[in-house]
Image (tube, rainbow, N blue to C red; front, side, top):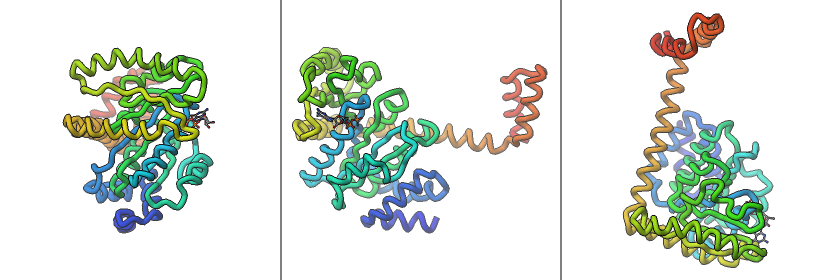
Length: 320
Ligand code: GDP
């Protein structure tokens, strides 16, 4: 506890070492992590959380790196959380991190962290949300959350952002990868990256057709925002300022319409229900002794009772 509150104080004062230690603590999810998050929480709520998602190979990492550089050029502090569920590695030691760091090394206005597999995607989503809170609380004005847009769990992580940038690229097989992954519904800004490659204009047109439908729905009052479709070349930074402008315009839209608070409330509700579910599960399971479970397994195997009846009895017994 003591150590956790000291880390929070030092991280709030700008210590990068304390910040890194704090994030490791939160990834480990112990009692100290809870205490640290509680102490940090009053300082959160200021950052613009921007999700960047898309199929592997579209150039997300390259784009995120450029966005971070461009934000710094505008004097904006930025935290980056790169989520890679397929990677067993975590912390600051990823090769990708070292490559990213090369451009941004030594700049106290940037903090980059990779998040890797935590055994379950739900666990990864929780840890990611908590690390975003730490960077928010530590005062980074923009937090970029990079996720692979592959499945529902990744979409859920992206959904926790205020603004979601969906990245596409030509020549990845399917015309529009984001359609397949169900990312179109959550896209606030669409970027066709690799605009130097043939087929970029086709991909942009395909997106326009899809978004054309979305936009008319939006105009009908859903959230009043028509996602712009931008082209970029992340390799050399072409189009990156326009992406940042669109992201900033979306933030203004959220603020002006009150959707900012609405999204916050929706996120908190999801987070609270998930945490409650997990806590209830943990507490109930903690009351059941392994021998009891074994005893019921034997009875189910012997066809004395079925699984559901066994569960009812276990719960009725309250673990006694
Ligand atoms: P991610 O898997 O979506 O994070 O994609 P990466 O950022 O790792 O990029 C995948 C590959 O595409 C790398 O070899 C990049 O150098 C390359 N790449 C990224 N952006 C561009 C671009 O604008 N044009 C071209 N031609 N290649 C790019």
